[in-house]
Image (cartoon, rainbow, N blue to C red; front, side):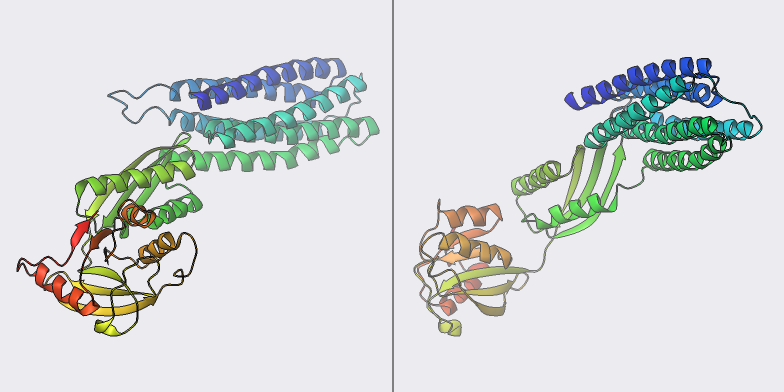
Amino acid sequence: MVRVARDKKAALISVGVTAFLAAIKFLAGTLSGSIALVADAVHSLTDVISSIGVVVGLKISDREPTKTFPYGFYRAENIVSLFLAFAIIYAGYEIVLTSVEKFTVVSALVNVPYAIMAALLSLLFTLLLSRYKLKVGRAENSPSLIADGEHTRADTYASTAVLAGILGNYAGFYFLDPASGIIVSLFVFKAGYGILKDSIKVLLDASIDYESLNRIREITSETHGVGRIQSLAARSSGKFIFIELEIGTKLKDLEQAHQLSDRIEMRIKSEIKNVDRVLIHIEPEDRGILRYAVPCTENNGLMSKVSGHFGEAEYFCIFDMQRDDNDFIDMRFLKNPFATLEKRKGLKAAELLVANDIDKLITKESILQKSPFYVLDDAYVASEETDLDTIGAVIEAIIVGMRGNGLEPARERG
């Protein structure tokens, strides 16, 4: 997989750069007598071990699912992140110990230019490396690489403290080095705690962030055919997200319900990064009514004439029929604002009716294979043809047809 390969590349680069810095700092620390540089070199050595742990974690998480582990090994990254958090906290503890010890040691350094050069080189490379790992980790949603990047960012504080200590020692202010070390340790502890908290949340199946969860809810609600979201849960596993949805729909056709499920999954995966699986459970939802729309030439109640043209109709009569007893319960007229358009008036009118949540459209002209048909079909709205002239006649024919008297009010399409 390309994403995992990129993660591994970043982690391997981290191992190489950090090992190089550890060697340079240890050599300069030994030559100059800087305890801070030697301690920072040992600290960098622990970073090398941590980075190797990231590579191992990514390698494990890249394995294909098995019968024993059907959901894959993605959480191996979170386990690695957990250990990295402890490593960061321990590094902070080391900084505190070293700083306290240096309060009791008053000595001038030798070969200071070497020490300053090593500290500056360490600060520059550590800063660049942390930005690189955080950028790749966030782009690929890799928790272990983000944790390693945060660890490296914490190291920039340590490198700054070391540089300040060396310069302070050179100027005769021996207290600056241990004081800076204690301040830096607070940032290190904070970074370690944040990673520790996030790792534990994922391992305990905590929900994903509110923004992503809310966007999933919006995507689902905006998809035509979805009635009500009954439940939504999403969790992280490594860099990937698993989503469980339970939705209500008025669709009765099994194939249409399956298409609706596929459409929701496709939209979520196209907008939310690193979604591995979307499990959708569909429940039938009966709102108790059927909503019809008929294009009209006027707004004259039941005496309104049915328009012979869909897109050019002055009004749309929208009425509801009770499913249980087939009674007519409500009617209103909607002005068609697109009737005078030169182009796409039928398509715009269809979108208007979809927004009004209709179930069936009855027209005198056939819209089959035309743009309005595809808009309505995409929203699971059926279309029918009729030769009746008034809204009253259409409603009466629908009532008779629904009561099973053998009179079909229209010829259904779609």
